[in-house]
Length: 114
Image (tube, rainbow, N blue to C red):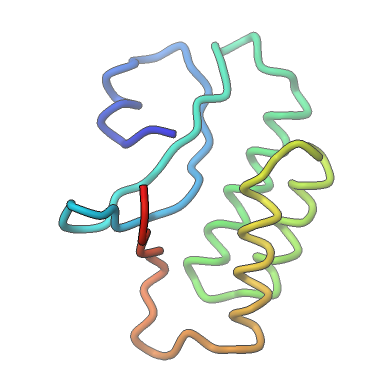
């Protein structure tokens, strides 16, 4: 996993997936967190499709459309069964369908450990 700064420092030529928006222990403010998928042109098409589904689900999640988000994360997980982030986010979105995060929810996950 890496920050926006790492992604920018790596420069062009890499495929990334935005995983979440988190507040990391010891840092102030929310930070986008990315996963390096590989070099551009060398990442399997199916992985890129799963990335695109995941990121669309993430946008739905941030917008509070939790049913749509859960379905999108599940679809991304089905494309890449080894993916650990998509099932986790599907579960989080499904939980928010039942237990609303409330009007002050801003989509940021507060990490309690590194």
